[in-house]
Every structure is written in C-alpha cells, then in structure tokens.
Image (tube, rainbow, N blue to C red; front, side, top):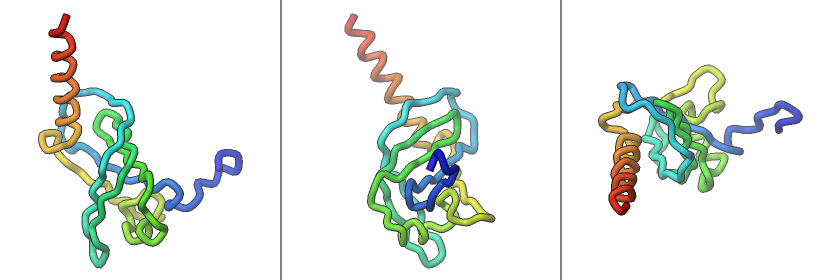
Amino acid sequence: MIISSEAGPPSFYPLTLTQLSTLGERHNQAPSKFLKNIPAVDDADGVSVPTNRFYFDGLACHVALEGWSSDKVEDAGAFVVGNDPDVLIVQTVTWEESSQKIFLSEAIEDSFRHISRY
C-alpha cells in the first residue's frame, strides 16, 4: 500500500469521521478503543462497530477494527471515507453532547484522584 501509493478498498481499514460543531476544551487525546454507532440511512440499518478512535482537537477519526464485511462497509455509503468519490458524510455533535467531553472530564477527575494521594 505505501510503496504503491494505493489506498486499497475502503473495507481494508474503514474510517469514519465525527466533527465537534461547537468549541470545547482545546486538547488532543491518545488513541483509544471505542464503540462507534453508525446511524441508519435510507435502506441501510444502523450498526455499532468496535474502532480505534483518534482525536485531534475537534475531529474524531474512527478506524474499524473488525466486524465489518465488505458488504457492511458498502452499506455505510458516504459515512466511510473513500466509499463515495463525490460525497463524504461527517457526523457532527456539539461539545456539550460529545463523548469527548465525557472522556476529558473522566481523565481530569482521575488525575485529581491520583494527585490527592500524595
């Protein structure tokens, strides 16, 4: 893939994106495992997929780990990067309603618990 500069089919490592639509705390986060919910669209059913989640100051990238057959990736349509050459659907969520706010709040609380031991 790298040598040939060919990305391969979207089903090799299906990638979906979620963009925060309002400002929250500015930060990045180490990759983590996450259960990503892809909503139902048109005739395709919604699905929950285990992913590796990468977060970059407002943009969450979810790379499917397993459980997505080529058919499921195709059914997800423009939610998967590269599935449709003309359209990409990026889910949006406000900071206040985001998983990221919850993750950051838990990390801060956990840090204070560890600090208070000393």
